Length: 425
Image (tube, rainbow, N blue to C red; front, top):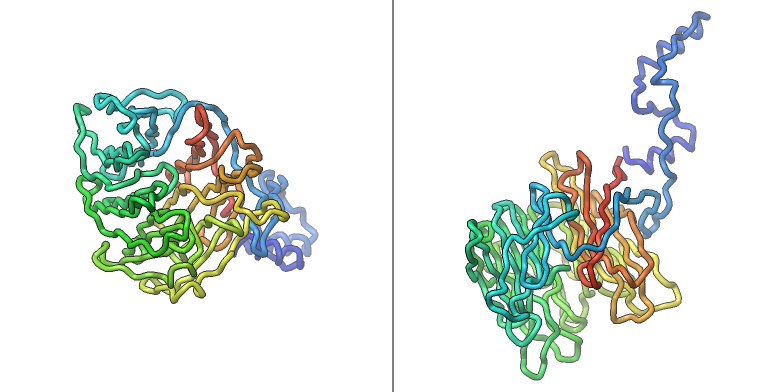
């Protein structure tokens, strides 16, 4: 029984056995009362239950009655990834940093500074289950960025792929699931030179090698850009999802054969811009890159189901509270974190950071869901000094559920070291 249904039944006076009480307990106590005998009290049973916060939200809004348990906030550079062992990786100019204490202290794992230019600056780090350290470097200028594999002995690196144009972003456009790694490239388009960051590459060997699987054609120059926004590997369908923007160039693609063939959601221009894709067992959630800000949802009937155009997607499914008098995009979805447990449970955290193009926007929020249907707003910051763009962790829905929410843009960076609450209980 879900928690909302529990509250509804409780308010209606329906008898519900609370946690720790059984039907036999109730029957024995009732019989003792009829017999006139004393009922021995169990000290543990007489203690008041821990009060749970009342639900606030619903009806297309995130619930707001749970919050991250914040351990610490600090400014200490730019963490961008945490591996399956809890080791955090980050970037600092040409250096790959690493931390074994959740970014309280760091050390240099590897440096690309031998090249001596900003073209070798680390943009992000990806460490799939194989343990291989993959760095996306360069790509902010006219020269396309590279995907580098750091040698196991840290004595050098191997260039696995060079993009024609653009870079690997730290805030969206890459995903790792077991041995599958999908990466898209990102940059502002140069329409005059016909240069666009529109390549998607795939590894099926845990980052040992990559191949180009998608390079969608330009649809219109009457748009801000033509570039990749996000990619997702959907383990329930064995499917790769790709979101491309902007505006008239916007499209959602998917492939069920690891990129050999692709299906388009709908006609270009009809597809809303999204910057995050999160595949749940019973649905796919899309984090928006436009008004209204929030979650678009496609509910699927089974792993082989496919959406039949934009009409199949509920928009908005969940809308984040922003300035009701402002019809300009104030924030958009940034890099999510998705846990899928062996027993079928799953948890997704998705940050939304304010748009720097909007001079008065200042909010960043963290949404979370265990089913892609109901979403909870676990954190909100209302300052332009912090732009939340990346979530790392938790590693499991059990244990300490530790997470780092990071600002990888502002000077000195900013991290929120916190625990994810048990909002799904």
